[in-house]
Image (cartoon, rainbow, N blue to C red):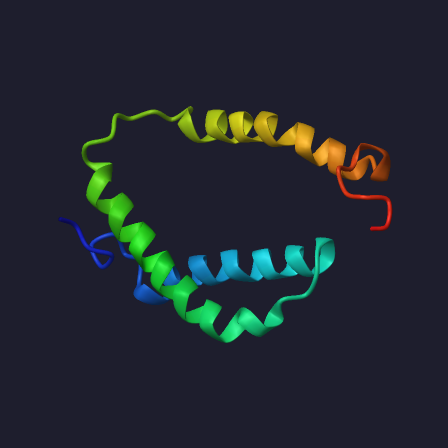
Length: 103
């Protein structure tokens, strides 16, 4: 099994990817829902370990995966098409909401 050192990626770089995901999540949650910055201290630990774990798992599986250069853009397109209706309905306002009128 190849390690993170074999791919010239340090543990700091791998942790940074998890931390970037955490910060993106917290900022979007702050802007769209409610601020939850209180989870930042524990989130840093979980995100750093998660970034390393995801990379190590992918690194272990990469050798057995077929070479598909189109896979990432195709997956992005599929996820975009799946999520687009929910974004559109969420931005249309209350008239499509299932919440009671008091909210």
